[in-house]
Image (cartoon, rainbow, N blue to C red; front, side, top):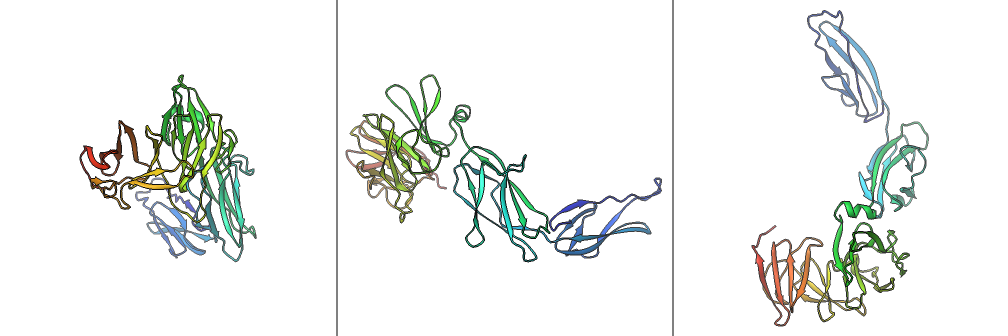
Length: 367
């Protein structure tokens, strides 16, 4: 048996009409091999042990050898998104052998089209999703000497396609907008695309290849990072906020451009939901407040809310908000901004003329 493996043993007591058929199981070395009261044997560590089955004055024995086994030191996830970041994986191989990794189709054993394993012994190994669809991938680790049984784990790769959004109510869509022709646009967070729904309910991809990236150009060839929010100005331009404070623009002709790119030295999360007011000023929410966004360069300035979470009312600079990631959202109506303050369970009102924040509705709750 391989270390970590379990097998069921069965003891038969004769004669068939024996009055007491109770079987007691034992192991000579439970540090190497264990056995439970039902006869289920498990190899714990490399070595040998004698398993005995005893009924009355009679007993039978079996020597079990626990062979060394490959074990995970950094196991693959149970599931991952097709556009996820890479996952570090690592396995320990006994007897001085080295591991070899493969991502395989569980049915055919051929290399998987959904994921691959990249890297080397010096740099480490990564499980890399290929963004090519969804389904199971078998991650297999073998030893260089082929003397030890392989270690395997099946990972489920998840992905969204346009039809999923119709049946699931736009799962993972963080924000919707609507244009003058009643077309709805969805910020598909996990799909890395902007989806369009016409007035008849037909879903098409408006922009994005579905591959993580920063490519500008025609909407069909453009690529996005994790999309946080979308907003449309009065000229039909769609603005897209991404993770790490990135701001993109999609012109009415479908051309995608970058207003603010990711700064390699900047780990700022950026804005989540974004919204224009009637004057064409773009605002974006964070977890603790509202930012005003410069459309020329994507730079942020704080409009309302301090740097820490809270529920204080007052001026724009002294008021506080509190929201879990992505759940502070807003609308602007008749010179007032209404903010859904998620963690405080409140709707807050910002009088944009007076610059004052108050509680419009709800009962404050903590946590």
